[in-house]
Image 1 (tube, rainbow, N blue to C red):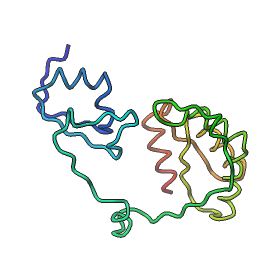
Image 2 (image 1 turned 180 degrees about the vertical axis):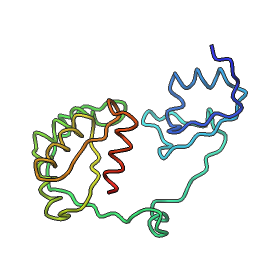
Image 3 (image 1 turned 120 degrees about the vertical axis):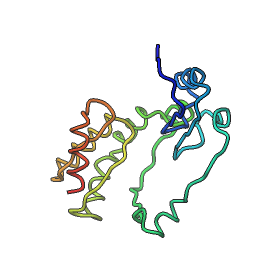
Length: 172
């Protein structure tokens, strides 16, 4: 058992706080003040956060952050493609990551993404957001095959030291 009694609990990614594990923690430490932060205040399952949080304070919009130089402006490019949504299952209110990856591979989009990136942004650093670990590893390999220095930074199997080095390498 835990012998200390926190007076404040801070939850990052607070939209997960209504999950069973967090609920047990919050019920156990019910006397502690609670601060939850998240960029995703709406859960895919529709459950609200008001059960645990009294007030919702909205931060500045992405537009404001870009206009005031806190974030870089973005340019979005896409390749013309038709994916078959019928072949992608819905899981927890969102498209299945593994089905999405398979559709991207089957449609040849991953290679197209590297080709388009090379055309539009030669020799520029990039961050590619992927569907899952398999997709991230595969995209890093495709970029490496195209001559880019590429690595995947994933949630599992990466030590804190490796993670810090990968982030530093991107910055350099």
